[in-house]
Length: 445
Picture (cartoon, one colour):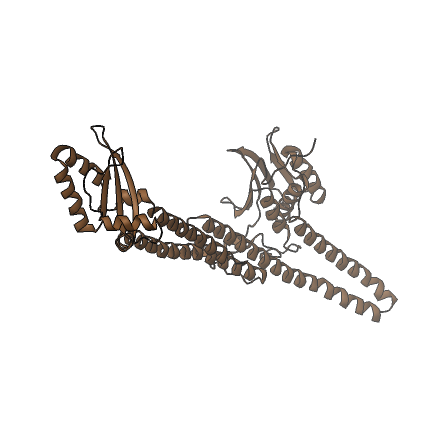
């Protein structure tokens, strides 16, 4: 019995069996002498009624009461005092008494019950009842009809309830199992658990979490596939140029071959740079280690010095408080800001400064990098940051991975990157970073 359905269903049936067993024990208890004396309509309150009639109205009226009970219920009754003497004649015939004396309690056609009663006046009485078994069985059937009917109804209701409850647990689990199989085949449908996620119980919460996880994984798988397609496309161009240059070098004379070597070296450098950027993008998904304190002003100054080595004719203005710090990964954040700064210098016209500002705002740090270049067409702004995307008006060399690396690095810090055209002209990149990155773990002391 490995199925959860049968385990739960069997558990409920075990509870039902226990209820039935207790009912049977209750039925046996019903057959006890005290229960019969207290519940049988012919014996219930008979002792107190008879004692009141005997003490107030005499023996004749008390004898008449016993005869009435025998007439209606066919029950023989004797009443004795403390000495065992009969107070009234009773309804038990002498022949029946002789028969009982000969056979004792074996093979008697009636059941003998006794009850002791003490009246309010202090007198004690012993009542002896003899109920024929047919009369007792008929009373048992009539008295147990309602409890047995209630028990049968309870069994039906409990069975239906256990079935519904079991199905309400196992059906969602089966849907989750199918969703797991679909996710393993990378064929997960985002709306496959939508109805299940609407449940307001633990299974609904689990389905909602799984649905979000499945959507995230499907998105990652799709982006990885797209990245592989883009990588293969981008690698194909420099490899084709290398192959053509090598073919030309094989057929050329020594002088022409010497002229082709710089071309081969250039293509190798391009290919190496492309592979380096692809690896940098892939490393952002790896575990970066413990976060460290970052002095933002010092980091921006170092990046400005490195950028001016490439573009010494440009001017970079930095506006950053001296005490502005955050926790993060310096290499990752430095690479992201360096990409934004190099892009700004690439499109910024001479005579205009590139503005870099940083400030704290409601527990977050906002960094802005603005140039005064031509900007980007509005229809291409949503695509900026996608791997290998380059706006059509960008004539500068590149592979379209810089902004993708920047966006991924900022997201790893728990922040976001906004790219837009500045209202007064140029292009602006705005970063919002938390002081503590998501999943922050302090560096060991």
